[in-house]
Image 1 (cartoon, rainbow, N blue to C red):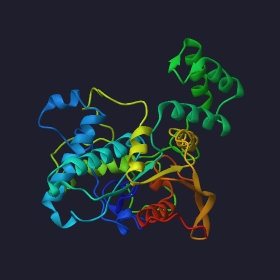
Image 2: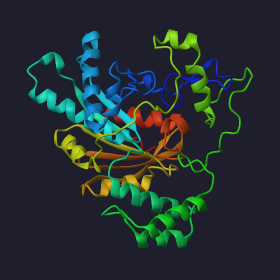
Image 3: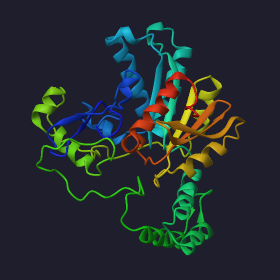
Image 4: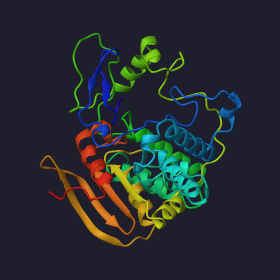
Length: 352
């Protein structure tokens, strides 16, 4: 409701307006709240929340998909794609690997999923390069001083994940220097007003920084929860039910390599004004794969403007989305739709 879905919530928290750039303009979309405990999802076994991790999340998502396709068999033969952002840099390739494994070794044709591709946006992919890329991004975008930047690189051992007291001091210094900005979009205004008692309709042109508040208010309306067939509960954007995360590999680059080997279409895209998992982190992670360039770096266009930049490698495509933050479709819905449409068609974003 703040990104790629068909509707967004108006500032009164009670009504919706249509998102003309929703991704369901170009595909059937399933939104999966994952792992159990997120959003309206839940487990009947409360101890599950104490043993959640990457492996169980991938396994549960696969089980969901198999059962969903049993319930709606008319979609079984359709091409299937997985997309996600942020920590879904783990979720997406891990679920895709599960699908490939079951497709290869399952004797039940009814459980075959026609996986064609994955797309990861501003994704957590490789811990070392993610952290180094973040430091380089905030320095090159004039958010921290030369002193703190040099101190971080002198005292923080990213390779061995060894962060001394001096390292922590310089990281704290950098945090103070950055100040009160939205790290998910370093140029976006902060939310100053939450629910507004008005009848105005929201705009897709300028993303409202208070949108999260509108959605939270809307999804806690009893009639809305009933219409969604959800349990009556206190909905919140970030779940506090999951208390323990038991497994999280430092890198998913091996999983991405596996998918490329089996011919799965792999796109990694990045909004270029995100400082949390910035474009520099993504570029460093891709560089670690040592891939051969097929189509050199070029600007791509939508509506007569540069929508971002793209480069195609053997087995992987990298795309930036200009002016987009961590949640790409929130800030640049039109450019995001052009990007994902190209991904689904298996072509590079338009060069003009």
